Image (cartoon, rainbow, N blue to C red; front, side, top):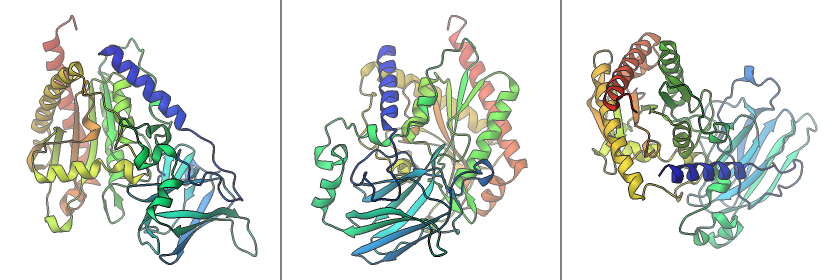
Amino acid sequence: MENRAKHLVFLGCGLLCAAASVFAVAGAPSAAEGTQGGQSAPAANAPAASAPDFPVASGARLAGDDKQTRFILDLDRKIEFRAFPLADPYRVVVDIPQVNFQLATGTGSAGRGLVKAFRYGLVMPGGSRIVFDLTGPVKIANSYVLDAANGQPPRLVLDFEQIDRTAFVQALAPESRPELKPAISDSTTATIPAVTTAALPPVTTTDPRPLIVIDPGHGGIDNGTQSGDQTEKNLVLGFGLALRDRIEKSGKYRVVMTRSDDTFIPLNDRVKIARTQSAALFVSIHADALPRREGDAQGATIYTVSDKASDAEAERLAEAENKADAIAGVNLTDEPTDVADILIDLAQRETKTFSNRFARLLMDEMKSTVRMHKHPLKSAGFRVLKAPDVPSVLVEIGYVSNKGDLEHLVSENWRNKAVGSMVQAIDTFFAKRLATAGPAK
């Protein structure tokens, strides 16, 4: 099993490296039209302080109708880019160098013509992405960057034209064509960003301390849920960093973050980080929101993985969280899985036992310091929890859709209490696990 796992890790890293490619030359129609090979999605409003030399995007707009639609991005300098379509759902992805997006709040949320909406942000250090959600199949009729002229800034321009599905599919790269995908898809070679696990080789340290992976959900182009000017990606990143600092301060454990800034990380890469680093525990941090039609809910909830959701709300949440890669223009729905092997299945059963044990310990600690959901322990098919050999939980620290929870989520005092209870649960978990394992292990 160990050899197979290593083989899969090396294969994943190779695919990641293959994903990196060079941007099309700016100033002329994109030579990459109809090709696939995108990086992950961009992070909105990247801090200007950390990127003083990055190009600035100051405005974005759509024009046209349901036959022809134009997208215009105002810049302070010319940039290189690459544009390509994706199917099911219909999208166009534009990869560009890292850009400081200084766009008005709400830009992209309203569509026009062939574009339902678009998102933008940082996908990896040095790379940003714009993803267009389309009303149907289109072709990229023109794509170019205009020089500054007549008092107008440089502009990135893309023209979309309506076409039928047959023509759309033929314009896709072979690995992206729905009718050409093999039983085990290799589409990941063109869609996973070479930024995460490639930068984290298998651990070789002699440090005996358990390693904990903290996974702040969402990031970059994927904002997660939102209430006013508060986004889930920022709330959980702040919480995750505070948890990391408290854990490291104890000196008992090593800690790795799946992301420590506003960068998009595909779900599969989050799992790979835990596996390649031989993590002893994986904790994913999120903050849920209920649709208005579902009423109100409050309090923290702890999830473990299960093929069958514990209730309808857990199923809805898992389905929503599992769509994060699609939001970023990354199609991993057909990725090969290694959990069919019976040996790995046995390991997974043991891992689930440890995951459930930690979830219960975490609930016992958190309920004494923070408000918990009326049903605090749940399970569902979260992709990010499916490492067969790493105990994993997903913690929804509260609901941004609930006024009281949101007040807690932005409170440093509340965060300190919640972080403290999580660290106490971690201490109890490893004390019991190491005692059970004995010195030989």
